[in-house]
Amino acid sequence: MAITDHALAWTQLFGELDRSGLALHLQIRRAIVTAIERGLFTAEARLPSTRQLASLLGVARNTVVNAYQQLIDEGFLVAHERSGIFLAPDLTVSETRGPSHGRTIAWSRRFAVRPAQLRQITKPRDWLDYPYPFLFGQFDPSLFPANDWRESVRAASGVSEINAWAGDLIDEDDADLVEQLRLQVLPRRGIFASADEVMVTIGSQQALSLLIQLLVGRDTPVGVEDPSYPDTRNMLTLATDDLAALAIDRHGVVPDAAFASRNVAFVTVGHQCPTTAVMPLERRRALLEAARRHDVVLVEDDYEADLALADEIPSLKSLDADGRVIYVGSFSKVLAPGLRVGYVVAPRTVIAELRVLRRLMLRHPPSNNQRATAMFVALGHYRTHLRRTAGVLEERAVRIAGLLPRLFPAFRWRRDPGATSFWVEGPADLDARDLSVRARARGVLIEPGDIFYADPEAGRACFRLGFASIRTDRIEAGLTRLAELVTPAGIPASQGMAEQV
Image (cartoon, rainbow, N blue to C red):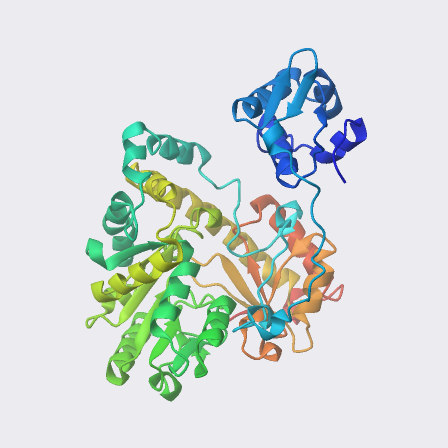
C-alpha cells in the first residue's frame, strides 16, 4: 500500500525507533530511503513537516531537520517553499509489482546442490535478549574493547591511510595486517611465515570453504572428526562422495587406519570441536608422522587458540617439517564474530592458488576492516584485550566448574584449558534437544550436541555450554534454571555421578 499523508501511515513506516542503537536521524533517513526503493510513495505524497514528524516519532525537531536536509542534499527529497517536502520527481516509483503470472520454474530440479537439506547449527537471532545465553562463539558487549577499537578505526581513517586501503587490491591483502599477523599473532602459536605464505579471509569460514574448493573433488578421500564442526562437515558433504568420519578419543583425533586412507583431513587439535580436548604434544607428533607416512594433508582449524591461559602446546603447523599442514585462524572468537577477519597460513604455492580462487569470488575482504584490525594489533590493543578477556573467561569457567557437580550430579563434563565452552554429557535417557527447547522457554540457551555428530543419535544426550556470551553474575541463576529441568529435587551431589571427563 502506498504511503499517503496520513499520520498512521507515517507512524507505521518508521515503526519503533531504537533509542539505544543507530543515531535517530540516520534511522529516519534509512526508513525514508527504504520506502522510496520499495515504491511505497505515491507521486503526490508530501512528507510531514519537521514539526509534525518530530511529534509523531517523539524526537527533537532538529533530528528530523537534519535527516530531511541530508536527503534533500542527496537528491531524494525536494523542498517547495510554502508547500512542504516532497519526493524528488525523478525518484517516483510505481507500486510494487505482484508475483509473475508466468509459468513457475521447478527450482528444486535446477539446483546442483541442496545445502538447505543438510542439518544446520542454529542459534536464535535475538539471543542477546535472553537472560542466560550459554552460547559458544557469540559477541559479549561487555568484553568488546570499544574505545580501543574506535581509536584503531580513527587511525585507519586518516587521509593517507584511506588512500592506502581504498583502492582495489584485486587479489592482495592489506600489507599492514599481514605484517602484524606475522609479527604478533602467529608467533604466539609458534608459527613463523613469510608474507607470501599468509592470506586474509572473511573469517575462518571462508578459509575452510576456499580450501575445500581447492583441495577436494568429487572423488577425493577426505576425513573430518566425529563429532566435528557441523559447517565443515556440511561443506565437505557437498564437495566429495568419499567422506569418512574420523574417530576421536580423549586426546582428539586418532591417527588410525581410517585416517591413513584419506588424502586430506580437517582437524581441531587446539580445542577439539566440540569436546574441547587439547591434543597432547606426543599425539600431535604421532599425527604428523602418520600424515607424513601416508601422505595426508592436514587442515588445522585453530579457532580459539589465543585465549589459552595455560602453557601453550605448539600448533601442528609449528611442528610441521614438510609443509603438509595448512593453518586456519580467526579473530572471531577473541574479538568479535561480526568483524569477519580470518587468515590462512600455507605453503606459497597453495596461497597463490587461494588468492586467485578468492578473487573469482569477491576479490579481497574489505580493506578498511583489514587496516583497522592491523592498527588494533599494532597499537598494542590486541595483546591487552587478550589478557583482559582471558582473565574474565577463566573466572567464568571456574564458576561453572564449581557449580556443575552440585547442580548436575548425574552428568559428565569436560573443559580443557583455554576453551570457552564445556562439553556436557547427560544420562543415557536425556534428550538434549528437547531440553534446549524447554530451557529456551525459561530464558536459558544451550546448544544440543546431536548436530555435531554424523549420526545424531550418538550425541543425543550431550550439549555444549558456552560462556563467552553470558555475564559472570548470571551464570549461577542460569545453570540453576537449567538444572531444575533435569535434576530431581533432593538428590545430593554425593549420591550422583558428576565427573569431569
